Image 1 (spheres, rainbow, N blue to C red):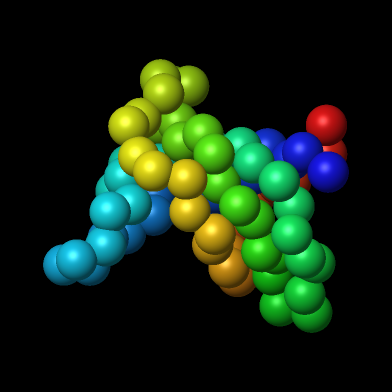
Image 2 (image 1 turned 180 degrees about the vertical axis):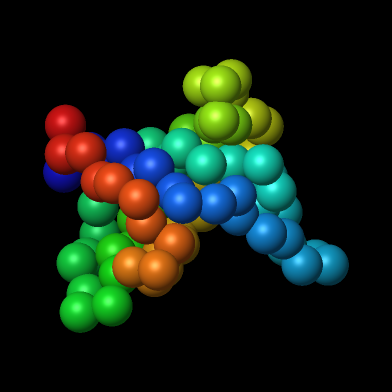
Length: 73
């Protein structure tokens, strides 16, 4: 199932990780709904203005505390 995930705050990145630090909207395939969050294979990254960001697809576990809204498409 395709989802669009809106985050409460931007992602952060650590040295060696290649996540766009300003991403707040993620699109991809829902892999799993967990008791404390969702796992999504992210294929599209966007900033708060909807501008697409450059990044490789990535499988992310996003905790509920980071989620603002998940839209199922």
